[in-house]
Image: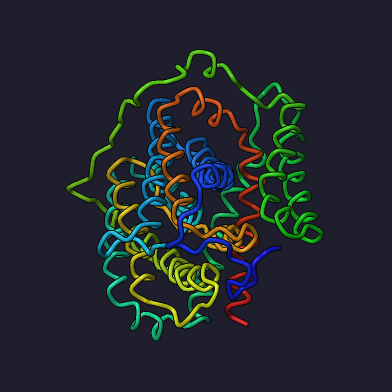
Length: 378
């Protein structure tokens, strides 16, 4: 039976230890769910920018690595870091539009500097959570979230029409439409665990359609090694920021504010759904979740990839529908994500995901994000 919003039906609370077999099995399920947003967001990012093949490969691998580390920290309690709950971390699609603009107009170094500065901004915000909730009202946060969703949708719609010369012109729009329709149908009809897996099912359906249209280019998969330590491709920081940096900084700050608000909400709700008898929310744990997002984004900026964010609805549903909130599961999810970085063959396969599949998925996510913002305003 799925757990209710109050945590009823939870079999293992965060501090309770479940078996290794159960932790590993749940961890594999969590990885499949958590990997899709990061890979598809990064796939669309590298396809929309002027990064070299080596830079693009490293950016994807670094994103998976950072999300794995952040997921482990989130499940733990390491001083001011971590909320002690299983909060899945993924590359945040909210930054997609501004990140593409930053790379194409000013280069990877400027993007890295912007990610680092906004990560420090998030860490500073974590210290003032009690004051932030008074200043950032639901109306303000809702409007910001809607604007971000619209901005990303513009980028996604532009990419939908982009396809390979050998494929029919209608291929990409049809594939994206299939992803949206399957996800919408499951959102209306699916219940329980099927609803949790609905985004993955939509991606698989769109990927099959993309294969039938011949949208896959698997040339790099055959040459990639099965196991290897990745070669870092750090872009470095722009220590003498120019006009482009200062023009883009306000946009990054606004997006980071919205991501911080989502992390705060996730930190509060995950406490309630992970305990059988929840009490008042512990804002020290919420602060730990926000700090984890900030530190993860900081590491991501230094590594040359995008900022991260919490998978709020997925993390909450994962605990509710499975009834397993033991932090051992979070450790397994993070460890598996980190281990995947040592498999270049898998990374090459993930990079072959057509832009149409990623576009369809992100249209779904941004549509839900827009509705969430509108609901907050109303």
